[in-house]
Structure formats: structure tokens, C-alpha cells
Length: 86
Image (tube, rainbow, N blue to C red; front, side):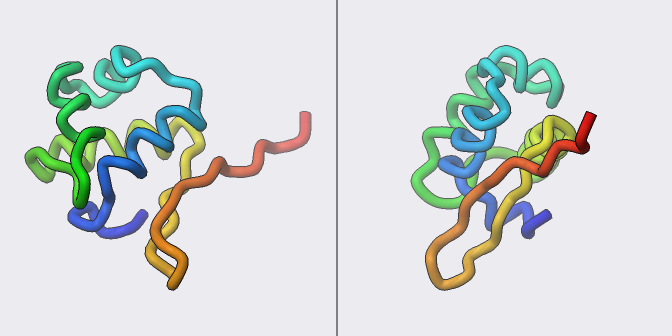
């Protein structure tokens, strides 16, 4: 995972969308309130909030298959982990 203080609100929102999670589902998985998640996702830069809450959201998204991609010259992003063949 990228450094927690470098994860942006937009990455969290994009990761949630890729994982097809509603805000309430992700908030519950991370054990935070929906308003706290909304504030994180609305952040223009690094996700607003306590570091432990941001870390909990990142862990919940990673458990759902999201990979956080660090800045690589093209900007930070997210993608989904490959699923194992069934």
C-alpha cells in the first residue's frame, strides 16, 4: 500500500466505485461513520481525517481487491487485483 498520508480522497472514491461498494458498506467495513467517509472522499489532496481512519478505509478497500497505485509521473490511482481463475 502507498503511504497513508499520500492516499487521496479521489483514490478512495475511485477504489470504492471499482469495488462496487456503497459508502455505507465501506464505512461499516472500516468501522467509521458515513459522514467521515464522505469528508475523506471529498478531499482535494490527501484524504482528510485521522490517520487510523484513513488506514482502516484503505485496508477495507484492499480486502475488497483494490490496489492503490502511487504517483509514477502520471498521477496516483487505483486498480483492481486480478481475480483467481475459477
